[in-house]
Image (cartoon, rainbow, N blue to C red):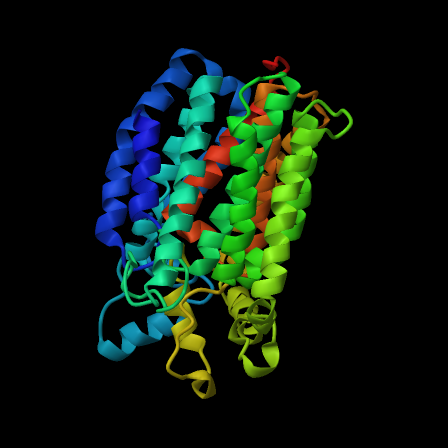
Length: 434
């Protein structure tokens, strides 16, 4: 129940990446009981030893901002790379250089550290729950995704004048529970393989109840139509690989046999939706990829972000400091009515804020992801294997989307990533329930 409460709070209150201090605090408070209970269960059952590598990555993730917050003597922090302008500012104002943390923005770093509480709680919870309970959490995510599609449809029908949960959402965009339409597209692509796999698994078990199968086909069709309405370039680009891998996971879940009528229902639902989109909405979708009339500011500014990151190596400028740091180096000829508050590339932003420590953590995560994904996909069809293969696709969507955006800076998607990581981590277990 605590896990479900955290999921519900994350969907309802965690769909933005900025200006949400009060809502984020509510989610963090909701995560604390779950964090304590899940950690206590893992320690009591001695189950944490089976997941030492992943838990080590989690510990390192939490440690980075906490290390950056440790007060240092003036002689130490003033000697760190990239602090020259700060020292100069203190000299000009006549202020003495006292003890100070490594990070340039301690308040943002504290906020970033606290924002790790919800995903950490969800990860520990998934590792300590039963298979049925984990499956229920995934079903809550699918239900929330469908609710978000319905809310997006209502937003579209209202003409973009109302029904938005965030005041800074662009009017006319389909965003659902989110402030950014790209993040809604990510949610749909993450939940897509779970819905399809749940449906296909009923074929393997010769289950007479076909509700899950029909829901999977319907959901897949709705995702296609929703992505056309959302018009997220990242979502449209990632749809093809996510859909192909989802159908492959469905084929495995169905027993790796000859595709029967059930799987054809899934494919047919997707095909019908694609046909409808091609006939009714293809020109507006293609227009989103016409960059001749659009200023691709993020691509032009990535070299400056990378160059600035070199200034703060090897330890970075501090988690959450990107906005302040970029303001200090932004060329005057780029100033306009918009502002570049995120790098729109989480790998570059991590490079700037955490230096070698953050990049090392990302590489460690990729090693873990590759190993667990290989184990999950070569395993025979099973109830847990179905969830693990779907989770690997969901994680892959977020890994790729982070190249051109910042999906994990929303609490909703960071909690879902933790849920998927917990599911995939269980691929390390040799025994699986068919």
